[in-house]
Amino acid sequence: MYRIVEKIKLTPTDKMLVIEAPEAARKAKPGQFAVLRISEKGERIPITIAGVDPDKGTVVIVFAEVGKTSKDLGKLGVGDYILNFAAPLGNPLNIKNYGTVLCVGGGVFVGALLFLIKALRQAGNEIVTIIGARNSEHLIFLDDAEKLSDELYISTDDGSRGYKGLEFLKELLNKRKFDHVFTIGSTSMQRLVSELTHPYSIPTTVNLFPIMVDATGMCGACRVIVGGATKFACVDGPDFDGHKVDFDQLISRMRFYNPQEKIAMVYHYKEVA
Image 1 (cartoon, one colour):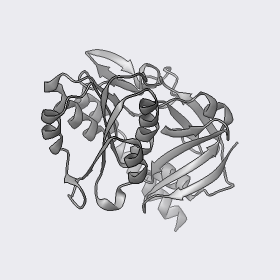
Image 2: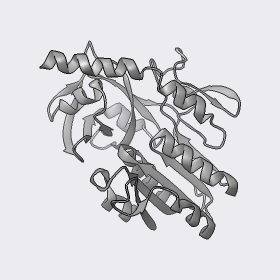
Image 3: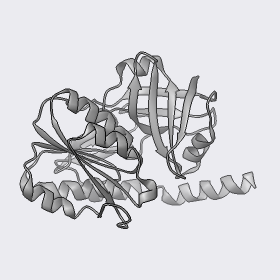
């Protein structure tokens, strides 16, 4: 059992939990993820690691309440326990001194992006960061991003704060030379970033989160096509070359269980009511 020691409500739908998981806290690196299960009857869900404190033995996760399991997770509070917390899973990112690095994050994945930025900064990189969200209400960790970055840009889908969308990235890429780009966020956002950096031949690393079941490479549910070859995101990734990912196939597979997910939500709230 893994105890929740801190809970922060970031936005009306986004939460941050700090969980006691000493072994994971000692080993987890940026880019890796956890698979958790709230209770015996709960489903296993993957969730990106947003930070660790090896001295305190804690791991940070940030998530949005979008489905039944994430809503159930959001109901837990300080002192409550999570039944299973398997971590770290996947491969850590390659942290080194690239030079000037562009880091692009969106929504709840900004937590994981900051975990990466801290490591890249310690390795001596110059950090240019773009933080995005669908509107100003859902922008998170801006103060932390500003402290850790040499330059910070803000983007919202509706233009309520900062730039509207990511089209301004074209101008930034024309003005600045970047040695590497890291992006984590919605699949559509990562796809757009990869498409924008491709003409400049800037190495671009994406963090994928397709459907997962066992997260050990056994089930094959998380398969993605990268460079024409089949890869499993849980053991070959979750980080890949964004210029080689078949995003059409990835998005199609991610939508496969949308009807069942909606039905689960309907039945859940019907039972609660």
